[in-house]
Length: 309
Image 1 (cartoon, rainbow, N blue to C red):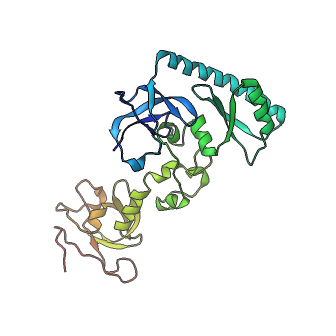
Image 2 (cartoon, helix red, strand yellow):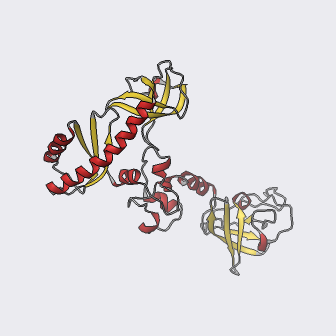
Image 3 (cartoon, rainbow, N blue to C red):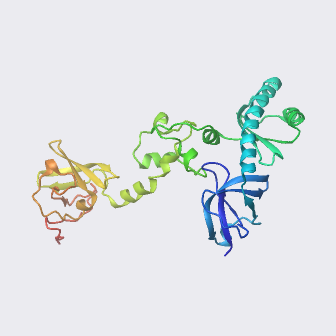
């Protein structure tokens, strides 16, 4: 297997593999590499390691060198030029009256190309704009239309949780998110509650989706009747992070029980439903014969955990 190092060019960006070419590199070191866009300045995020050839996009390019102080100064100068280019581009866009919003300007490290990222509702004819920009900057110009998620990643911000946007911190790629993920997690289907600042479904809906799927496959269905020392109760809610189910007695009192104990009771202590919270005083559970309301029999469990036939 080839030896490679992982390099990123932006924070929370995609990791690209390069041949270290015998250079002993460590995570955090800055390097100069050759890419399809030109010579670029990147950061090593994974030290030299063996990687299966299937995970590598051919041809594997080599690391040119460690970044020098001169390289770091050039990167800083490029950032300053990007700010200037942004202002000029906005003026040119307004001059041509184009229906587009400029989001970010990026200089390739060797200044062989400038990339202008923008958003627009539809296709934009920016051919004249490209000519104007090329005349000003005397280099190759690329205008790249991006979506609202990419815009949020570039601009940054805070999510509803109060933390920095996941896409600006650690998400390298955007994965598909569906409304079904919100339904599976019993979240309110209010767009204001489950949408991010980009206006799309929040990426974090995917994080615990598989956990909820697994829990609901193992848990009794809502409406399942269980018999406790305090009478018949019906499962009404789940607490997936705690791996518990909540059952409601006919009196309206609710009991919270670990999922395992809705199937097999292993509690040898005194049953105290009013204080049952999964910390030792569990309600004695015995699934009724009408497990799901359709006549499907349940599992009877004694208080000492031995199943009754």
